[in-house]
Length: 455
Image (cartoon, rainbow, N blue to C red):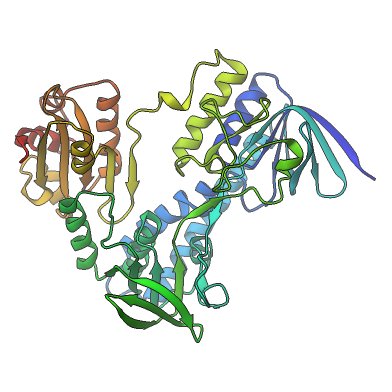
Protein backbone atom coordinates (compact mmCIF):
# COMPACT_ATOMS: atom_id res chain seq x y z
CA UNK A 1 0.00 0.00 0.00
CA UNK A 2 1.37 3.40 -0.98
CA UNK A 3 1.26 6.26 1.51
CA UNK A 4 1.16 9.92 0.49
CA UNK A 5 2.62 12.85 2.39
CA UNK A 6 2.32 16.53 1.58
CA UNK A 7 4.79 19.24 2.49
CA UNK A 8 5.49 22.87 1.75
CA UNK A 9 9.12 22.07 0.96
CA UNK A 10 10.93 18.83 0.16
CA UNK A 11 14.72 18.75 0.56
CA UNK A 12 16.47 15.88 -1.21
CA UNK A 13 19.84 15.27 0.42
CA UNK A 14 21.12 16.02 3.92
CA UNK A 15 24.10 18.21 2.96
CA UNK A 16 25.07 21.54 4.47
CA UNK A 17 22.90 23.73 2.26
CA UNK A 18 19.92 21.41 2.54
CA UNK A 19 19.98 21.02 6.30
CA UNK A 20 20.47 24.75 6.96
CA UNK A 21 17.61 25.56 4.59
CA UNK A 22 15.36 22.90 6.13
CA UNK A 23 16.00 24.21 9.63
CA UNK A 24 15.31 27.83 8.68
CA UNK A 25 12.17 26.97 6.73
CA UNK A 26 10.95 24.82 9.59
CA UNK A 27 11.45 27.68 12.04
CA UNK A 28 9.49 29.90 9.65
CA UNK A 29 6.53 27.54 9.99
CA UNK A 30 6.93 25.64 6.73
CA UNK A 31 6.16 21.91 6.68
CA UNK A 32 9.46 20.40 5.58
CA UNK A 33 10.35 16.84 4.60
CA UNK A 34 14.04 16.03 4.18
CA UNK A 35 14.88 12.83 2.32
CA UNK A 36 18.33 11.24 2.67
CA UNK A 37 19.19 7.98 0.96
CA UNK A 38 21.72 6.75 3.57
CA UNK A 39 21.55 6.67 7.35
CA UNK A 40 25.34 7.08 7.28
CA UNK A 41 25.11 10.49 5.63
CA UNK A 42 22.95 12.57 7.96
CA UNK A 43 24.64 15.95 7.81
CA UNK A 44 26.15 15.38 4.37
CA UNK A 45 29.68 14.80 3.13
CA UNK A 46 31.52 17.16 5.48
CA UNK A 47 30.82 15.59 8.90
CA UNK A 48 30.71 12.01 7.62
CA UNK A 49 33.29 11.41 4.90
CA UNK A 50 34.78 14.83 4.15
CA UNK A 51 36.04 17.79 6.14
CA UNK A 52 35.55 16.53 9.69
CA UNK A 53 37.07 13.02 9.43
CA UNK A 54 39.94 14.08 7.18
CA UNK A 55 40.92 17.03 9.38
CA UNK A 56 40.55 14.81 12.44
CA UNK A 57 42.93 12.34 10.81
CA UNK A 58 45.35 15.22 10.14
CA UNK A 59 45.23 15.99 13.85
CA UNK A 60 45.74 12.39 14.95
CA UNK A 61 48.54 11.78 12.45
CA UNK A 62 50.48 14.66 14.00
CA UNK A 63 50.18 13.13 17.48
CA UNK A 64 51.90 9.84 16.59
CA UNK A 65 55.20 9.45 18.45
CA UNK A 66 58.23 7.81 16.80
CA UNK A 67 57.91 4.69 18.96
CA UNK A 68 54.19 4.21 18.27
CA UNK A 69 53.32 1.34 15.94
CA UNK A 70 52.03 2.96 12.72
CA UNK A 71 49.30 0.33 12.28
CA UNK A 72 48.16 0.44 15.91
CA UNK A 73 48.14 4.23 15.98
CA UNK A 74 46.27 4.41 12.70
CA UNK A 75 43.65 1.93 13.90
CA UNK A 76 43.25 3.94 17.11
CA UNK A 77 42.88 7.16 15.13
CA UNK A 78 40.27 5.74 12.76
CA UNK A 79 38.27 4.51 15.76
CA UNK A 80 38.38 7.95 17.35
CA UNK A 81 37.34 9.59 14.10
CA UNK A 82 34.46 7.17 13.54
CA UNK A 83 33.19 7.89 17.05
CA UNK A 84 33.34 11.61 16.29
CA UNK A 85 31.47 11.30 13.00
CA UNK A 86 28.83 9.10 14.64
CA UNK A 87 28.23 11.83 17.22
CA UNK A 88 27.93 14.47 14.51
CA UNK A 89 25.61 12.27 12.47
CA UNK A 90 23.26 11.65 15.39
CA UNK A 91 23.27 15.33 16.29
CA UNK A 92 22.42 16.37 12.75
CA UNK A 93 19.55 13.91 12.57
CA UNK A 94 18.04 14.90 15.90
CA UNK A 95 18.44 18.62 15.24
CA UNK A 96 16.09 18.35 12.27
CA UNK A 97 13.88 15.36 12.95
CA UNK A 98 13.31 16.60 16.49
CA UNK A 99 11.68 19.79 15.19
CA UNK A 100 7.87 19.84 15.07
CA UNK A 101 7.75 21.08 11.49
CA UNK A 102 10.47 18.83 9.98
CA UNK A 103 10.47 15.13 9.16
CA UNK A 104 13.54 13.19 8.05
CA UNK A 105 12.90 10.19 5.80
CA UNK A 106 15.63 7.72 4.88
CA UNK A 107 15.33 6.35 1.38
CA UNK A 108 15.97 6.91 -2.34
CA UNK A 109 13.98 9.82 -3.75
CA UNK A 110 13.11 10.15 -7.43
CA UNK A 111 10.87 12.62 -9.18
CA UNK A 112 7.76 11.28 -10.85
CA UNK A 113 6.67 14.73 -11.97
CA UNK A 114 7.60 18.33 -11.20
CA UNK A 115 5.77 18.35 -7.85
CA UNK A 116 6.07 14.74 -6.72
CA UNK A 117 8.79 12.37 -5.57
CA UNK A 118 8.56 8.68 -4.79
CA UNK A 119 10.60 7.26 -1.92
CA UNK A 120 11.16 3.57 -2.37
CA UNK A 121 8.07 1.68 -3.49
CA UNK A 122 5.55 2.62 -0.82
CA UNK A 123 5.79 6.37 -0.23
CA UNK A 124 4.88 9.40 -2.35
CA UNK A 125 5.64 12.97 -1.29
CA UNK A 126 4.22 16.09 -2.91
CA UNK A 127 5.26 19.70 -2.35
CA UNK A 128 5.21 23.17 -3.83
CA UNK A 129 8.97 23.67 -3.53
CA UNK A 130 11.93 21.30 -3.85
CA UNK A 131 15.58 21.72 -2.93
CA UNK A 132 18.04 19.27 -4.50
CA UNK A 133 21.12 18.85 -2.30
CA UNK A 134 22.48 15.43 -3.22
CA UNK A 135 26.14 16.46 -3.39
CA UNK A 136 28.90 14.77 -5.36
CA UNK A 137 30.75 11.47 -5.38
CA UNK A 138 34.29 10.37 -6.26
CA UNK A 139 35.18 9.69 -9.88
CA UNK A 140 37.19 6.60 -10.76
CA UNK A 141 38.85 7.32 -14.11
CA UNK A 142 38.58 4.92 -17.02
CA UNK A 143 42.04 3.39 -16.66
CA UNK A 144 42.34 -0.30 -17.62
CA UNK A 145 42.29 -2.47 -14.51
CA UNK A 146 41.64 0.38 -12.06
CA UNK A 147 38.00 -0.30 -11.32
CA UNK A 148 38.56 -4.05 -11.22
CA UNK A 149 41.48 -3.96 -8.79
CA UNK A 150 40.64 -4.75 -5.14
CA UNK A 151 43.44 -2.32 -4.22
CA UNK A 152 41.56 0.65 -5.68
CA UNK A 153 39.89 2.94 -3.14
CA UNK A 154 38.18 6.30 -3.08
CA UNK A 155 38.73 8.82 -0.32
CA UNK A 156 35.52 7.56 1.29
CA UNK A 157 36.78 3.98 1.32
CA UNK A 158 40.18 4.97 2.64
CA UNK A 159 39.04 6.86 5.73
CA UNK A 160 36.81 3.97 6.75
CA UNK A 161 39.43 1.23 6.68
CA UNK A 162 41.51 0.43 9.76
CA UNK A 163 44.35 -1.09 7.73
CA UNK A 164 47.17 1.35 7.09
CA UNK A 165 48.55 0.67 3.61
CA UNK A 166 52.29 0.12 3.65
CA UNK A 167 52.57 1.67 0.20
CA UNK A 168 49.94 4.04 -1.18
CA UNK A 169 49.75 5.34 -4.74
CA UNK A 170 47.68 8.49 -5.22
CA UNK A 171 46.43 9.12 -8.74
CA UNK A 172 45.92 12.87 -8.93
CA UNK A 173 47.87 15.72 -7.35
CA UNK A 174 44.98 18.08 -6.69
CA UNK A 175 43.69 19.19 -3.30
CA UNK A 176 42.20 15.79 -2.44
CA UNK A 177 45.24 13.83 -3.55
CA UNK A 178 47.77 16.03 -1.76
CA UNK A 179 45.72 16.13 1.42
CA UNK A 180 45.43 12.35 1.63
CA UNK A 181 49.09 11.93 0.71
CA UNK A 182 50.01 14.17 3.65
CA UNK A 183 47.73 12.35 6.07
CA UNK A 184 48.87 8.84 5.24
CA UNK A 185 52.53 9.74 5.06
CA UNK A 186 52.36 11.17 8.57
CA UNK A 187 50.77 7.93 9.74
CA UNK A 188 53.77 6.06 8.34
CA UNK A 189 52.74 4.90 4.86
CA UNK A 190 55.07 5.23 1.90
CA UNK A 191 53.22 7.54 -0.50
CA UNK A 192 53.70 8.29 -4.17
CA UNK A 193 51.60 10.95 -5.91
CA UNK A 194 51.19 10.55 -9.66
CA UNK A 195 50.12 13.79 -11.36
CA UNK A 196 49.59 14.02 -15.11
CA UNK A 197 50.27 17.78 -15.28
CA UNK A 198 53.85 19.02 -15.74
CA UNK A 199 54.04 20.02 -12.09
CA UNK A 200 52.19 19.69 -8.81
CA UNK A 201 49.76 22.49 -7.87
CA UNK A 202 49.73 23.90 -11.36
CA UNK A 203 47.28 26.70 -10.50
CA UNK A 204 49.74 28.31 -8.08
CA UNK A 205 52.61 30.56 -9.04
CA UNK A 206 55.85 28.72 -9.74
CA UNK A 207 57.63 30.05 -6.65
CA UNK A 208 54.82 29.03 -4.28
CA UNK A 209 54.35 25.63 -5.92
CA UNK A 210 58.08 24.98 -5.54
CA UNK A 211 57.96 25.70 -1.81
CA UNK A 212 54.87 23.50 -1.38
CA UNK A 213 56.43 20.66 -3.37
CA UNK A 214 59.62 20.96 -1.32
CA UNK A 215 57.61 20.78 1.89
CA UNK A 216 55.82 17.63 0.75
CA UNK A 217 59.08 16.07 -0.36
CA UNK A 218 60.67 16.92 3.00
CA UNK A 219 57.86 14.94 4.62
CA UNK A 220 58.86 11.93 2.54
CA UNK A 221 56.14 12.07 -0.11
CA UNK A 222 57.31 11.07 -3.57
CA UNK A 223 55.88 13.48 -6.13
CA UNK A 224 55.90 12.36 -9.75
CA UNK A 225 54.65 15.07 -12.12
CA UNK A 226 54.05 14.45 -15.79
CA UNK A 227 53.01 10.88 -15.00
CA UNK A 228 50.20 9.42 -17.10
CA UNK A 229 48.76 6.30 -15.45
CA UNK A 230 47.93 3.88 -18.26
CA UNK A 231 46.95 0.65 -16.51
CA UNK A 232 46.76 -1.39 -13.33
CA UNK A 233 48.33 -4.82 -13.73
CA UNK A 234 48.04 -7.87 -11.48
CA UNK A 235 45.77 -5.86 -9.15
CA UNK A 236 48.66 -4.16 -7.33
CA UNK A 237 50.95 -2.73 -9.99
CA UNK A 238 50.47 0.82 -11.24
CA UNK A 239 51.80 1.36 -14.73
CA UNK A 240 52.53 4.92 -15.79
CA UNK A 241 54.33 6.70 -18.58
CA UNK A 242 56.66 9.62 -18.03
CA UNK A 243 59.00 11.28 -20.47
CA UNK A 244 58.29 8.60 -23.04
CA UNK A 245 59.23 5.73 -20.73
CA UNK A 246 57.08 3.17 -18.92
CA UNK A 247 57.39 2.83 -15.16
CA UNK A 248 55.75 0.50 -12.64
CA UNK A 249 54.95 0.82 -8.96
CA UNK A 250 53.77 -2.02 -6.73
CA UNK A 251 51.44 -0.85 -3.95
CA UNK A 252 49.02 -1.96 -1.24
CA UNK A 253 46.37 0.63 -2.10
CA UNK A 254 45.55 2.91 -5.02
CA UNK A 255 43.66 6.11 -4.24
CA UNK A 256 41.74 7.51 -7.20
CA UNK A 257 41.81 11.24 -6.47
CA UNK A 258 40.89 12.66 -9.86
CA UNK A 259 37.80 14.62 -8.89
CA UNK A 260 34.16 14.31 -7.93
CA UNK A 261 30.98 14.39 -9.99
CA UNK A 262 27.46 15.60 -9.08
CA UNK A 263 25.08 12.90 -7.83
CA UNK A 264 22.06 13.04 -10.12
CA UNK A 265 21.63 9.44 -11.30
CA UNK A 266 18.30 7.97 -10.26
CA UNK A 267 16.72 11.31 -9.33
CA UNK A 268 14.35 11.26 -12.30
CA UNK A 269 15.20 14.84 -13.20
CA UNK A 270 13.89 14.40 -16.73
CA UNK A 271 10.43 13.58 -15.35
CA UNK A 272 10.51 16.81 -13.37
CA UNK A 273 11.67 18.83 -16.36
CA UNK A 274 14.94 19.73 -14.68
CA UNK A 275 17.84 20.24 -17.06
CA UNK A 276 21.43 19.18 -16.42
CA UNK A 277 24.71 20.48 -17.85
CA UNK A 278 27.10 18.62 -20.12
CA UNK A 279 29.09 17.70 -16.99
CA UNK A 280 26.07 16.18 -15.27
CA UNK A 281 25.36 18.97 -12.80
CA UNK A 282 21.88 20.37 -12.23
CA UNK A 283 21.65 23.53 -14.31
CA UNK A 284 20.86 26.63 -12.22
CA UNK A 285 20.75 30.40 -12.61
CA UNK A 286 22.44 32.89 -10.28
CA UNK A 287 19.58 32.45 -7.81
CA UNK A 288 20.04 28.65 -7.86
CA UNK A 289 16.71 28.07 -9.59
CA UNK A 290 16.63 25.17 -12.00
CA UNK A 291 14.73 25.06 -15.29
CA UNK A 292 11.70 24.59 -13.03
CA UNK A 293 11.36 27.82 -10.99
CA UNK A 294 10.07 26.01 -7.89
CA UNK A 295 13.00 23.59 -7.82
CA UNK A 296 16.41 24.75 -6.53
CA UNK A 297 19.79 23.01 -6.46
CA UNK A 298 22.33 23.63 -3.70
CA UNK A 299 25.89 22.49 -3.09
CA UNK A 300 28.09 20.27 -5.25
CA UNK A 301 25.16 18.99 -7.29
CA UNK A 302 24.77 22.37 -9.05
CA UNK A 303 28.32 22.29 -10.41
CA UNK A 304 29.69 25.17 -8.34
CA UNK A 305 32.84 25.12 -6.19
CA UNK A 306 32.87 21.93 -4.11
CA UNK A 307 33.21 23.44 -0.65
CA UNK A 308 30.95 23.12 2.38
CA UNK A 309 30.99 26.88 2.88
CA UNK A 310 29.73 27.39 -0.67
CA UNK A 311 26.84 25.03 0.06
CA UNK A 312 26.14 27.12 3.15
CA UNK A 313 26.10 30.28 1.07
CA UNK A 314 23.82 28.53 -1.42
CA UNK A 315 21.34 28.12 1.42
CA UNK A 316 21.45 31.86 2.07
CA UNK A 317 20.59 32.53 -1.57
CA UNK A 318 17.72 30.05 -1.61
CA UNK A 319 16.34 31.23 1.72
CA UNK A 320 16.42 34.80 0.45
CA UNK A 321 14.32 33.62 -2.50
CA UNK A 322 11.83 31.78 -0.31
CA UNK A 323 11.69 33.99 2.78
CA UNK A 324 13.49 37.24 1.96
CA UNK A 325 13.84 39.91 -0.71
CA UNK A 326 15.06 37.59 -3.45
CA UNK A 327 18.04 39.80 -4.27
CA UNK A 328 20.95 37.68 -3.07
CA UNK A 329 22.74 35.70 -5.79
CA UNK A 330 25.97 33.89 -6.64
CA UNK A 331 27.14 37.11 -8.28
CA UNK A 332 27.56 38.56 -4.79
CA UNK A 333 30.44 36.21 -3.99
CA UNK A 334 33.75 38.05 -3.83
CA UNK A 335 37.13 36.79 -2.65
CA UNK A 336 36.14 33.24 -1.75
CA UNK A 337 39.10 31.56 0.00
CA UNK A 338 40.19 27.92 -0.19
CA UNK A 339 42.58 25.78 1.82
CA UNK A 340 44.60 22.67 1.04
CA UNK A 341 45.16 20.90 4.34
CA UNK A 342 48.70 19.71 3.83
CA UNK A 343 51.16 20.37 6.67
CA UNK A 344 51.39 23.32 7.01
CA UNK A 345 48.17 24.35 5.24
CA UNK A 346 48.18 26.13 1.88
CA UNK A 347 45.44 28.77 1.72
CA UNK A 348 44.65 31.03 -1.20
CA UNK A 349 42.23 33.77 -2.18
CA UNK A 350 41.84 35.90 -5.28
CA UNK A 351 44.36 36.07 -8.10
CA UNK A 352 47.84 34.64 -8.30
CA UNK A 353 50.61 36.84 -9.65
CA UNK A 354 50.41 35.04 -12.98
CA UNK A 355 46.64 35.52 -13.21
CA UNK A 356 46.82 39.19 -12.21
CA UNK A 357 49.42 39.95 -14.87
CA UNK A 358 47.44 38.06 -17.50
CA UNK A 359 44.40 40.17 -16.55
CA UNK A 360 46.36 43.36 -17.26
CA UNK A 361 47.00 44.61 -13.73
CA UNK A 362 50.15 46.48 -12.76
CA UNK A 363 51.16 44.63 -9.63
CA UNK A 364 53.36 44.88 -6.60
CA UNK A 365 54.39 41.73 -4.73
CA UNK A 366 54.86 41.23 -1.02
CA UNK A 367 56.58 37.91 -0.32
CA UNK A 368 58.58 36.36 2.49
CA UNK A 369 59.49 32.87 3.57
CA UNK A 370 57.95 32.00 6.93
CA UNK A 371 61.35 31.12 8.38
CA UNK A 372 62.47 34.71 7.68
CA UNK A 373 59.44 36.48 9.17
CA UNK A 374 60.80 37.98 12.40
CA UNK A 375 57.36 39.28 13.36
CA UNK A 376 55.86 35.77 13.45
CA UNK A 377 57.25 34.07 16.57
CA UNK A 378 54.26 31.73 16.67
CA UNK A 379 55.81 29.73 13.83
CA UNK A 380 58.83 29.08 16.04
CA UNK A 381 56.72 28.43 19.13
CA UNK A 382 54.83 25.59 17.42
CA UNK A 383 58.00 24.45 15.61
CA UNK A 384 56.62 24.91 12.08
CA UNK A 385 58.65 27.47 10.20
CA UNK A 386 58.20 26.02 6.72
CA UNK A 387 56.27 27.86 4.07
CA UNK A 388 55.86 31.21 2.40
CA UNK A 389 53.45 34.15 2.38
CA UNK A 390 52.77 36.03 -0.84
CA UNK A 391 50.49 38.99 -1.57
CA UNK A 392 49.57 40.37 -4.99
CA UNK A 393 48.75 44.08 -4.83
CA UNK A 394 47.22 46.41 -7.42
CA UNK A 395 49.96 48.99 -7.96
CA UNK A 396 47.41 51.66 -8.90
CA UNK A 397 44.94 51.29 -6.01
CA UNK A 398 46.93 49.49 -3.27
CA UNK A 399 44.09 46.97 -3.05
CA UNK A 400 44.83 43.30 -2.52
CA UNK A 401 44.22 41.25 -5.64
CA UNK A 402 45.14 37.93 -4.07
CA UNK A 403 47.17 36.10 -1.48
CA UNK A 404 48.75 32.69 -1.05
CA UNK A 405 49.67 31.64 2.47
CA UNK A 406 51.59 28.42 3.08
CA UNK A 407 52.08 28.52 6.82
CA UNK A 408 50.89 27.46 10.22
CA UNK A 409 47.35 28.82 10.77
CA UNK A 410 46.97 29.70 7.07
CA UNK A 411 43.42 28.32 7.07
CA UNK A 412 42.51 31.05 9.57
CA UNK A 413 44.69 33.86 8.24
CA UNK A 414 43.20 33.64 4.77
CA UNK A 415 39.76 34.57 6.10
CA UNK A 416 41.12 37.91 7.34
CA UNK A 417 42.65 38.61 3.94
CA UNK A 418 39.42 37.65 2.17
CA UNK A 419 37.42 39.97 4.41
CA UNK A 420 39.84 42.80 3.67
CA UNK A 421 39.48 42.19 -0.06
CA UNK A 422 35.66 42.19 0.12
CA UNK A 423 35.68 45.54 1.87
CA UNK A 424 38.46 46.98 -0.30
CA UNK A 425 40.80 47.48 2.62
CA UNK A 426 44.19 48.42 1.20
CA UNK A 427 47.43 46.56 1.67
CA UNK A 428 48.75 49.54 3.63
CA UNK A 429 45.82 49.39 6.05
CA UNK A 430 46.27 45.65 6.54
CA UNK A 431 50.02 46.16 7.03
CA UNK A 432 49.54 48.88 9.65
CA UNK A 433 46.76 47.20 11.63
CA UNK A 434 47.25 46.12 15.25
CA UNK A 435 47.36 42.35 15.81
CA UNK A 436 47.75 40.33 19.00
CA UNK A 437 51.13 38.90 19.95
CA UNK A 438 52.33 36.24 19.57
CA UNK A 439 50.06 35.36 16.68
CA UNK A 440 50.33 34.36 13.06
CA UNK A 441 48.31 37.36 11.88
CA UNK A 442 51.02 39.80 12.94
CA UNK A 443 53.11 38.41 10.11
CA UNK A 444 51.05 40.74 7.89
CA UNK A 445 52.85 43.71 9.50
CA UNK A 446 56.13 42.47 8.10
CA UNK A 447 55.23 40.66 4.87
CA UNK A 448 53.18 43.58 3.57
CA UNK A 449 56.13 45.80 4.39
CA UNK A 450 58.21 43.98 1.80
CA UNK A 451 56.07 45.07 -1.14
CA UNK A 452 58.12 45.92 -4.20
CA UNK A 453 57.27 46.44 -7.83
CA UNK A 454 57.59 43.12 -9.57
CA UNK A 455 59.71 42.85 -12.73
